[in-house]
Image 1 (cartoon, one colour):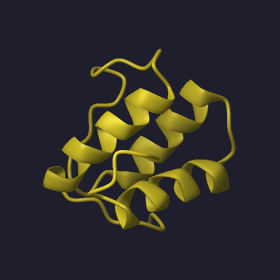
Image 2 (tube, rainbow, N blue to C red):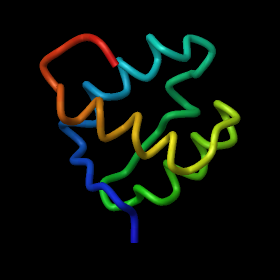
Image 3 (cartoon, rainbow, N blue to C red):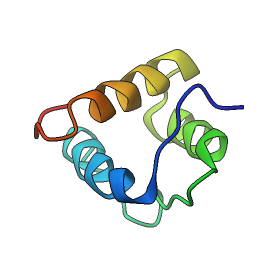
Length: 71
């Protein structure tokens, strides 16, 4: 079970933040289906070459400040 839960609505906004931070990531690479957080985290770990804790921290930070444009 993933450490976070992301709705499809929230993911649309979080994905924009992630793409701003990691501008080499494409929409296809960041495809997400609600309930597939583990798959997303694992894929992002490979794409940004970071460990699980960093990716989870980044996603949580984006979710907490959902209305802010910064990540």
